Amino acid sequence: MEDVRYEVDRIDRVLVAILAERQSFMHAAARIKPDREKVYDADRIEDVVRKVLESSKREGLSADIAEPVWRLLIEKCIAFEYHSFDASRSAND
Image (cartoon, rainbow, N blue to C red; front, side, top):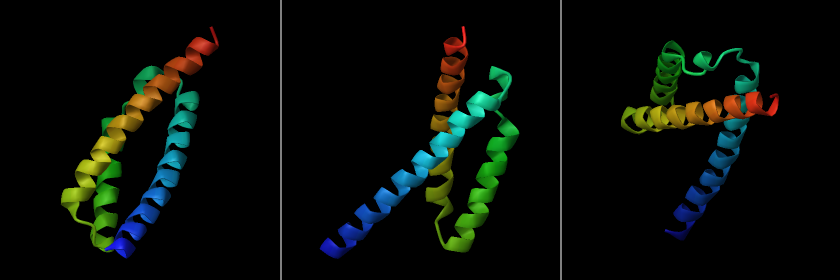
C-alpha cells in the first residue's frame, strides 16, 4: 500500500505542475483578450470537454471522473481569468 500511495503522491506533484502551467495560459489569455465578455466562451468550453472525453476514452479514464473534473477545472480557470483580466486593466488605470 505504501508503494501505491507514493505513486499517487508523485502523480499529484506532476498534476500540480501541469495545472500551474495551464493557469499561466489563463493569465496570458486575460492579457490578450480585448474585452471582459470574451473570457467566458461556451462554445470553447464544450470543445474542451469534448476533446477531454475523447482523450479520456483512449487513455482508459472514466468519463464519470473526467467530465466533472474538467468542468470544475474550467469553471475555476474562468474565475481566475476574470480576476487576471480585471487586475491587468486596473493596473493600467
